[in-house]
Image (cartoon, rainbow over all chains, first blue to last red; front, top):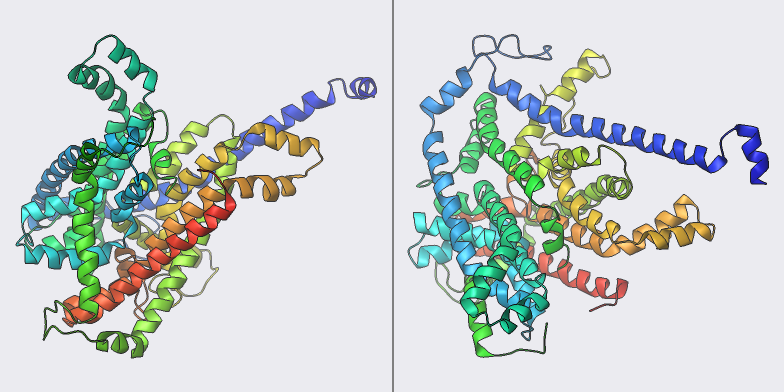
Length: 292
Length: 284
């Protein structure tokens, strides 16, 4: 049977099928890439365009692109708004929150990852609460709790709130890393007479490093884009980039200013995305959050 | 891992992480609950009352808000899945260029919700790209209303745009864990593309599909920022209504009732999920 087909077509059927399938996949990939470039690229491109609109030559219908470009919106935002202060607040709160959540998560993640404590599943679920709980509810009533203990409208309160929101990622990702250390390695080290400190330095720290990096990046990004808690607990004393953006998009909607702030907020995050892509092989987000 | 290990030191080590979260989240849930019944009230006297609950459920605005938020939750999670599932299937196979596509797809994951809302506003508003194009091509006579529309399409679109990579990552992981042997065996037994899709891929990816849809629903149901940018003037989402109640009208007790409704819905959905997930896969 196959001999007949071969003689008829020159190349065997299954080879032609495989070739056609390969071509189909290349076409499909090209299609998806094109769709994604439009889907993700155009919205970002529009924001860049809006941030460069020349105030003297407004961009209005029916122009597809602005008539002329200038850096006026950027100058305006940096000169007349609180953006510099908000940037400073955002980028001091975030590292502090990451550090605090790391310190708090480390022992917990160790136990959850390596020990079979009764109620482990329950604790794993509790850890997810900050991202499961609706942000505005937590924000409003945590602000009451904070008001009660004098943390409302304070810098420390802001750091605590951001730490809280970053904890789920940190604990979950570190737990996955701790759990993935083979027991053999630890047993071998113990056999060779390694003490606690040696084990921490030579086994645990190096082996959780990729997970630690992932957890830190997730916690950092969460802090940079945290809106609900900052809006309720920090405003008006402390403004971060998201709350500034929100104010530009609310009652006084100024599209050019909003585009500038949006770009300022977005750029570092996309850079971090590529760091994650480059340095982390496996998908930590899916691994640590794919199961509740 | 070894035997059960319930020593005190382990629990002590759980305190910084689990304790920290329990302290703050627990106290705010407790306060919401207590205030909804008039206890620990900030305004007025503190005494047990069901008055706030009656008031909230008698107000048409509240009921409309709840209905609207439920709609947003369902539409956003189903919509995102419809986009994510074909992509996830493609990623299982895929050819050259998959890596580049992977990075491109993930970009919205790292774009904050507010920024995402703003980016999409530029596309959908009266003088947005979509309207401009359609007008210039004479497809429509006057700009379409796609933001702040009564149905909430603007909100749904932003939710899908922002959360597609999140859902994709989770669904992709569960599709990737399906063994090729299973698919090959089905094909050997004469299964077509559709029956492989409906009887292999979808059932075996169900745990991931469920988790992602649950998380998506919760996000969209309790959403504040996206709604305030792109949502209709009436009805508002539950979270926005709660915020207005608390900060504008100073009706903290009624806001607490709305808060409890959001929390209850969230927990109910998770509970329903855990029951359903138990039926889908029996493993522990």
